[in-house]
Image (cartoon, rainbow, N blue to C red; front, side):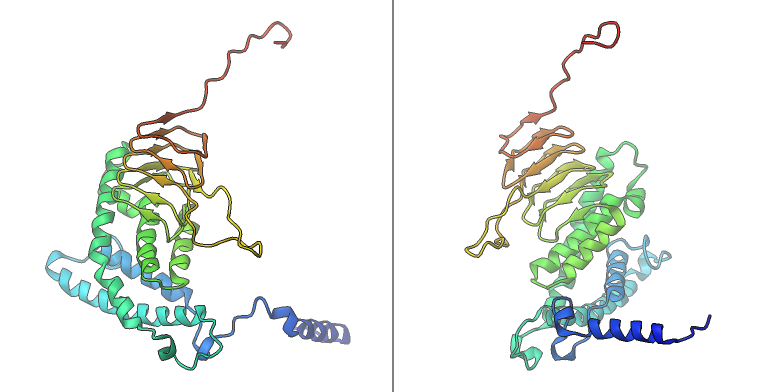
Length: 311
């Protein structure tokens, strides 16, 4: 299809380009790269997560023909590739996050991308150990599961936890933006929204998972189970002297060990759900629960209907 560039089209294009090029038009949405560093690559971060999954669950992702006798070789290749990709994206992440007007080089901020990348690499065995316990717990509490393999390969809960445990470790290393990108990848794929700052213990189970929200400052203990539609959120925000929300303050729930939270439950604010408690479906909680509490919806009142539909 060819376009006849008449005066009307030329004027419309010229006027639109002019308006879009005005500084006041793009001031808020324009990203000015520090030191002309390239923007983070979503494609590369997706590749990083693909490699991480292949490392954590060998034989399930990536090279599915891997054998025990060649395990060390494949691990070496993958870890080396992962380190190189991480160093590039972490450096770009630091530059993306940098707001200094006096930045002359990355040395000014004392950025050591190699050290933080290695720190993450060294934590991979611990991440795998935690995920192994998550898989076992999911199998134990889901009678519909046919085995560990099905959970690893197909369950959205373990996919979300894999991405979260990776993102959380990067968050602990104070690496900017990348943890949030990873958590949003999992959110898009599974419907499970876990902030990378949330602290989650061992043997954590997310059953079904769609609509689960876990906020930034949540602390979740060991052997906790939650179902679809659960929200562990904030009740309100403290404001500073200028009326802006104060960031980083504890504002999400603490869920102690052995708690079960059923579908649709909403728990808001810095409240503590005591050990061994059961929170029933569709309840709303904004205060602490002592250990071994049980909170469920009240039963509907019995309604007596007379002829004609009246009560």
